[in-house]
Every structure is written in C-alpha cells, then in structure tokens.
Image 1 (cartoon, chains in turn purple, red):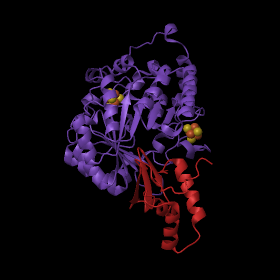
Image 2 (tube, rainbow over the protein chains, first blue to last red; image 1 turned 135 degrees about the horizontal axis):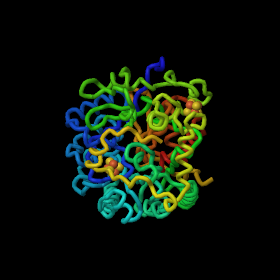
Image 3 (cartoon, rainbow over the protein chains, first blue to last red; image 1 turned 90 degrees about the vertical axis):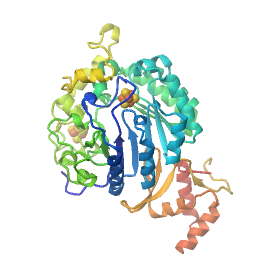
Image 4 (cartoon, protein in one colour; image 1 turned 30 degrees about the vertical axis):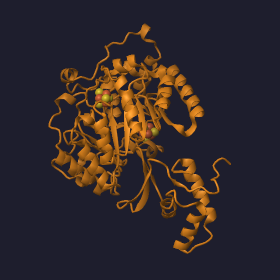
Length: 380
Length: 91
Ligand code: SF4
Ligand code: SF4
C-alpha cells in the first residue's frame, strides 16, 4: 500500500447486468456470470451514483451485459446527469429503440458507444450468435439522428482483423466520431477462445498499415484508436492505469472491483456496495489496496527502473499465466515466465490448416457458463 | 497556417464537450466521450468565454478587464490555437 492516500476515482463503471441477448466469443463478463445473481435494485444504484460523485468520479459508464435490459436505465442516467457526471452508455444496440433513445436524451445521456462484431452481416451474426447486424445499422442511424456523439467499438481478433478496411469504411459511413479497434484481450471468454482469437504478426502489420492509411485519408473527421494485443509487446500495459487509481467498477450484484476482471483473482475479498459505502471501498478496503502503488511487488519488478511506467502490468494476467497475482505480468520480457507468452505468440503464426484448434469456439451462453463454472484459468 | 483563426471567428466549445468545475479536484475540467482534460485556471477562464457569441478581441478585452492584466492578446491566441488543434473548440 502506498503511504499517500489515493486520489479520487475518475471513472465509475456501472455494470448494470450480466444478462445479454448476445453471445460474443470474446465477452469480458466472467465465465461464471450465470451463477452470479441478485442484481442491485434501482435505489442501490442511485446511492452508488451519489456516493461515487461525492468521491470525485466524473465519467460514468453504464454497461453490462446489455444495460438496455434494465428498464430503470433512464432513471439512473437522469440522476447521473443531474449529479454532474458525463454519462456514457455502452451498448450492443439491442433494445435501443426510437422511444428509449429519445427518453435517454431527455434524461441527459451524453454519449453512446455502440459495438459491432464485424463489417459483414455474416460474421457479425456468427460471432455474436444472433441476427443483430441490421438492427445495429438502424441503431447507429438513430444515434446520429438524435444528436449523440457516437463511438463505434469493434473488438478485433484473428477472425475479423482482415476486414479492417471495410470496418473502418463502415464507421465512416455511419458517421461515428470515434472508432475503437482494440484487439480482444485474453480474459474470461476470450481467454477460453484465445487460440481462435489471437492474430498472427502478419495480420497485425497489415491491419496497422490499413488503419494508418485511413487516418491520413479522413484526418480528424473520425478518431481511430487501434490497439494490438499486449502479447506482442515486450513490456506490459499499465493495467487500468494503476490498481485502484482511476477506475471503480461496480458489478451487477454490487461487488466493487478495481477492474472488471479482478473477480478471478484467488484469495481476494472484494467489498460489496450493499455492505460498505463507496468512500470506504475506495479508500480503505483491503481489495482496493492490495495492489495499489508498488509496495506489493516482487522481483524482477521491485528493483526495476521501469516500475512506475507499467506498475508491473496486469494482476489478472500474472495470475492466469504465471500462477501468481503478485508476479510480473508475463508479457514483460523480464518476467521469468515470458516464455509462456512467447509460445502462445509462436503458435499464432501457424495457420489453422496446419494446427486445427484443440477446442471448438465457445459462445458466451448461460448454458456454457453453468457447465464451465469457475473453471481455473487454463494452464498456458 | 491553416489553424490561424478567422479574424471574426467566435470560438465555442466543440460539440459534445462540456466544461465544468470539479469540487473534489478544485479545478475546471473539460469532458467528452470517455475522456477528460484537466484545466489550469487561465485555460478555464478563456474556455468559459468560448460560447460562440464573443470574438477573440472581445474575449481578450474581457479577460484584461476581469484580471486587470494587459496585454493578454498573445497568450490568449496561443492557447486558442492549441485548443483548436486538440479539437476542444470550433471556429
Ligand atoms: S461482449 Fe457481447 S455477449 Fe458480452 S456483454 Fe458485450 S454484447 Fe453481450
Ligand atoms: S520487470 Fe516488472 S516493473 Fe519492470 S518492466 Fe517488467 S513488468 Fe514492468
């Protein structure tokens, strides 16, 4: 734990529900989502919003699952806006009809982030295991008609990365202000599907060239964010910009987390907003202090001159790939377990013809969730 | 330079940007989809006046009057140039 008290959380991420009509293969919800019950009610969420704002949170994200499945969304957005948050809705588009989009505008919603799985109907519908492509196109038009800024989010991976040219063209056509093309990160469902999802080096290089070409062509008309998988880096990402430093996530059942995947870490007790106020959760709870600062570090991080830059990387990745949540993130070339990442990357260079994936693609469904339960992360 | 403002430009915050005072941080911030810029006091004073009704000389005159410091023309224009390049203001 660092000696100085933590600054305010700038982001409150309200994961309103794990329910979702889609079944994305890279879904970042916990694999065991189907067994996590007792969603917070409206009053609890209203209290969380007030306490978060008093703590200094200023960006508020409503996500899920699919947040449109909550019929109190308009009430929550209105309160968030009244409190002075900049309000962001992260949606698959399902349920965002004309009536609700207008009601959300009245409630003061500032921005909508709409996700697509691909630029083609076939792959979008296959990857989400739903017929949602046409609907998403209609929703994008509605978002613009109602004067919202629009971020399109397309999770990139081996199966759609070669379509990046058409994906960007689609975002430009739909009039998005921002386009996020982040490679899927290998947690939760994406971790189960990792060998299907991790692109080859050649695919990444091509995608980057195409993206830069578009940036030159469209200039500031649309801002394109392109993120490669960290497995291809030599240093880890500064995960969540530091544990308990910027982000405060409240999950559907009220468990508060420094990051939406932190629930997987063993032996950690994360507080619940039903039992503790947000200020105590953020400032003094054990869960939020466990990996704050750098006092928890082991070698090679502890004596590393770069430790302030990445704070040792991601704790979940350390747990999944090195079997120790306090180890250096194995993405780091200085990690004793870096060879694990190198092997995964080496395998990703081999085409599927020459190495049929060992496991079939798993879709995020309640049935799969119950079958897989809290399966220990796959040994790498 | 292409970023040089029109002589009669009346700068205003870009669409979807919001300027507000943050009590906890004790400073103004500029908010936009999924992001935030923290502002120092003089940047905030300039941006507050970028409401699409005042032209640059009017903004400068107001600031000189309010803070009893002059000339501020060069500083204000330099900041507006940055703000325009960052996409915080239009016109
Ligand atoms: S990633 Fe797909 S399945 Fe998971 S919550 Fe988002 S839209 Fe639903
Ligand atoms: S050794 Fe640890 S602190 Fe140093 S660069 Fe690697 S992950 Fe970061």
